[in-house]
Amino acid sequence: MKVTVVGAGAVGASCAEYIAIKNFASEVVLVDIKEGFAEGKAMDLMQTASLNGFDTKITGVTGDYSKTAGSDICVITSGIPRKPGMTREELIGINAGIVKTVSASLIEHSPNTIIIVVSNPMDTMTYLVHKSTNLPKNRIIGMGGALDSARFKYRLAEALEAPISDIDGMVIGGHSDTGMVPLTSHATRNSVKVSEFLSEERLEQVAADTKVGGATLTKLLGTSAWYAPGAAVSGLVQAIACDQKKMFPCSTLLEGEYELSDICIGVPVILGKNGIEKIVNIPLSDAEKAHMQASAEGVRKTNGLLEV
Ligand SMILES: NC(=O)c1ccc[n+]([C@@H]2O[C@H](COP(=O)([O-])OP(=O)(O)OC[C@H]3O[C@@H](n4cnc5c(N)ncnc54)[C@H](O)[C@@H]3O)[C@@H](O)[C@H]2O)c1
Ligand SMILES: O=C(O)C[C@H](O)C(=O)O
Image 1 (cartoon, helix red, strand yellow):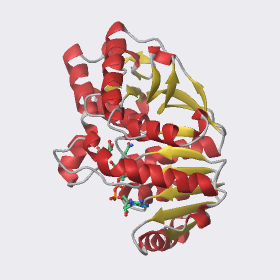
Image 2: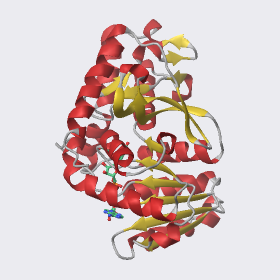
Image 3: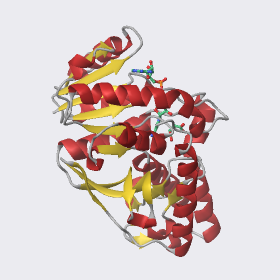
């Protein structure tokens, strides 16, 4: 199993590290545009192999896509992150060009690859990969919901004063400060609905904190987060590489599901060796349906800024 990660910055390196530590891939190739950067990150990570006990071979290259040839999975993290006070949507001007060029180079050398898009604004960048390549829809996956769901579970555990392993919950919708739809009505603590333990006001606070999860970290860190994003990507990569048939919310092209078409937005999907093997339709409350439609409007507005 060969995995390429483009962008050896904060998220790309974290993603490569988690993939290596989980020890399921034979090879990870890191690519960056900055001379020597990916090579340096790869060497540093390889020097953790004997300490962390993994056999994954990590190499780094500066813009040489021939070294990515035959990748089963390619992750795109290249592009600029936001600074405090910015929205993800403001990154479109620079990141759209990067994502378009990078996806073309990846497919040229790995025509059968599955692409995972991470660069922001992620739903629109995922849609851009659809519009600018000929890859079938099951092989284009946007990562956002897996991360947002991890943050939702963190906030629920905090509110419940419970261990995170007790909590289950999912966030669908657009990966943006206003577009996320935390599915509070479906969230549980050991199969008991969280609404049994928390007031409506407290649950609203949990949802609000979840939606601004990325902005909160950006304010604290001065740039956006990387540990949880890297871990979330590695979870998707592992589900595909190991044909796990696991369910994650991912951004995918909808064709009528959730009453939406011609848009990439986060919905539950089954991930296996073919990438997105199924889009799962789950019942939504009227309020969740309305949030999903409003979220889609936001994503469409950003998609409208694309020049494809
Ligand atoms: N979808 C998500 O959930 C999620 C989570 C976190 C970050 N992100 C996004 O991921 C992106 C990367 O974030 P980061 O914190 O790693 O940023 P970073 O600045 O640390 O790393 C980005 C890297 O991309 C490289 N790069 C730029 N143009 C390139 C090109 N054409 N080819 C190859 N490499 C190129 C840069 O040199 C840099 O090393 C940002 O757009 C950020 O908003 C998304
Ligand atoms: O917040 C950001 O801009 C980065 C990423 O989308 C995140 O949610 O951490």
